[in-house]
View 1: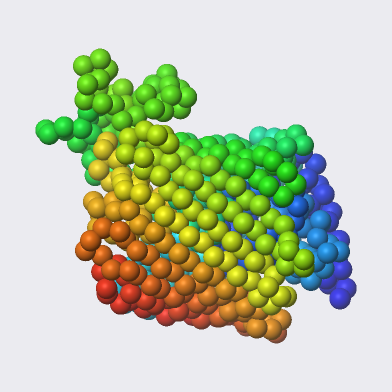
View 2 (view 1 turned 180 degrees about the vertical axis):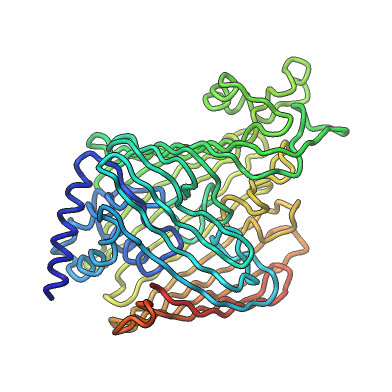
Length: 480
């Protein structure tokens, strides 16, 4: 008991120092499921949260946590203990080792391009704050094939402008199992990111803006118009992202997101080109054949995707819930072939104290993640940068599709939990079959650490893919 009291006092002192206008480290993204589950519960039952992008800043979560101290005391105590390392001046925040064996080389959802054939995964992270205005974060994944930096960067600034330089991940969506624009499906790219730690004004305005360089594309078109005989050269395009959000009411948050993939290889882009492409997307994208004679070969900037998103949380009697949705647009709402995407989600964080349920559905039209300038489309290292289902079709066939996922988290006891996700995907073009998959993980805390491990577990991932082939992966893991 004395240890817990000391921990909470230290947590309050450290977080209070961090909150006074300084920068903040980030919490893990798709690397610490039990911690992330409790955070999702917290955000769903809190008013004035209004956080629409990930990874979450530790400062944000600590601040929201204080609002549920009396209404959800058990959640408060659990999460206070879990995030305590992230609000100290420096800490080794998490470490995990997974041993697995799998059949068929299928991409794991939201795991940075890793597959069912990835047998050994070692992941972890640590950070250090040097005063209130500067810090260093080191986090990543090592497997038998490569090292994947996830949150490895330096950060500096103050409460309204934190600058992150290095490998910093971005997830532009309130959805938990997928993100149409930007997720962790592909490898993390080196970037420069500017965002705010403290929300601005009473509307809780937040922003996240970055520019990064993607991995090499197999071919980038030289010239403006797609035609027979186009020349393609290999190159590394740039990716610019911007998300802003604001509080429409205490319970409703609206966000706008934008991605611009441009340049690389034979295509040069000036600041003027970029500015015009940002403010006039309908004129600098999808240049028509009739306009070819009046523009230069690099007039078309590249590819653009945007979205409008909402998240609303409240309760019916004593049952809290969060309803959220997204309309995503390729280029412009009325431009081109009207390549749009529609998503809707419902989260019930407390069916009772031991059960949570989440349902998410997405439906997108033809040619999502495809682009006439870039042969690999919106991909990084061969994986789409958005929804996991974008990797579940032939490489050059950007079929319309719809997906559904159901996640159930069951707290079996104080030391045991079962986290299960069922997914369905239907590609609407002929030649594919409806895919179904089950992903479940059992976790058990240890009464005493064993060789440094604080908990262990087992996970199973199996199903049938869009070609009708079965796959399976079984793994065991230890958290340190």
